[in-house]
Image (cartoon, rainbow, N blue to C red; front, side, top):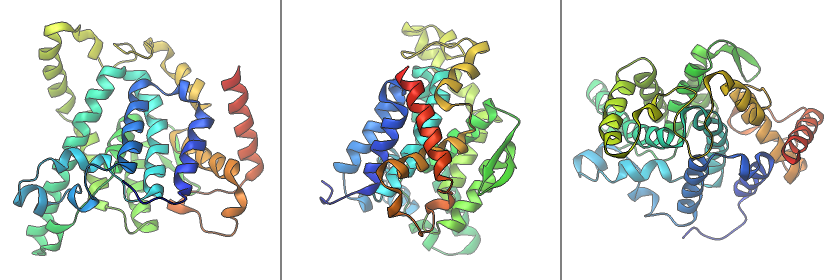
Length: 310
């Protein structure tokens, strides 16, 4: 169990859940969020026994790390930033794809991100002849989040994302964010995030989606209707079934019409406001996000509360 103490990141995450409203979070997204929080308090094993690396997973054949590493986090801030981003992506994607396919997608993305990470580290080891790449151990859900970001941008083409105030086409947003996070937070795993982007591209532009549909078709022949895994706005979902025409409108109900990154920045600002802005006054914003514009954050918070109370 985690050492007891005041965890500000967890308080921010609770504020984020209050802002969005638990009833507005689809079931699979909420369950995965709960699992990550549970494993933060009660980890399956110490971090050095769940993180994934070439040395531990491949050389020592500890393949269970591929399952455990995405669900464990280094500290409360690591958990908060990943889960705040996941809530937004989950609302958008689970509503569009349906709960069953989204759960399937998360499972495949989690495993594949770890495998691609291992392949990239092996290649780096061979190219540089530096064994430290094979011993680099990664943990956290952010690789999966990068894969989901590629998917989200694929389903919402066009437009721009503002990263540190600079407009970036959604087509390139994942790549720019990859570099920015590595610069602003050097302790993060560049290769792990890159692996997530590549997995996302395998799904949107490669054969992964077709392979997943064929595997799902084999399973659904036992008891499911394969049309539920179409990957379109309709489909099987224990939460909601959205017609293709209404996907954007239903998403906007939760997202207030903001882009994904604007939603995350607003969520962080709202959490900061609710808990106490004075804590961060004069401090540099973590992970490159801008927490200024307090009046605008308050107005956004009020709009959200009015909408969720109605």
